[in-house]
Length: 304
Picture 1 (spheres, rainbow, N blue to C red):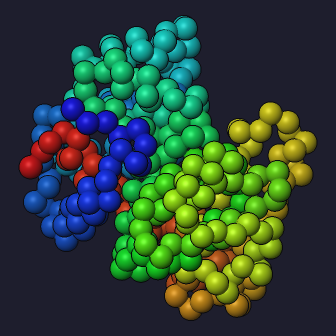
Picture 2: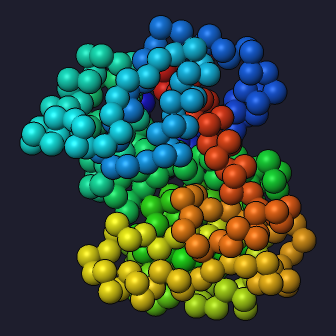
């Protein structure tokens, strides 16, 4: 039995297989319409979500399966003090696979230790978000046709941005990748990611606070929001929340084939005026996420 807790749980070969499967689903949706008939996905979301939860549910329904679960911790027995372990032991009796989001780092790992069915980490605190990374990888592949020899700009909240941490882990395994880390000093990439991933693997990177200066170098610009829910201090959030706002004029010196990405939800860090730019790919990411989650469910359930 396999789980997906961290993007590194899958080899690059397995990621390539998932991408190939997702592309086949896109081309031949009818072939997959009954693949998960009589299977149930449990979506256990202890933290609010729109895209990720609905994406998982849409993925399972389009595979012919069913969905049970809850959309916030207050509507589960967690509000009564039930432990994650006990919740998982109970739900394992009702479903075939679990997609779980939790505000505490490591909660999906705890779940995997007691579960009798596959666990998918749908986001744990500021730590990891591997299925968003799957959506990101399919988007990059469909826009660029490759994962190698790319300069990737990561902008905004790099400290708490779990999507950023997962994407760095994934792309660092491909050749010719360079990262440009664009953030305020207070929201820099954590040392454990810098040291254990970038420096350890000799991945070239640079850190800057200047988005405009970095823009002409980038093949991919991955914007993130400053996350109110990760801050202990409201004043710090207010001071940093508008650090980077992408507007059309800031793209004047960008490459013609720049791929602009964002894991969503956005607040105001990308102007709606950018939405009509052909380089804006963040709503494509949403759709790609559904296809990759379909491929992932098939893989973990070992459905041929």
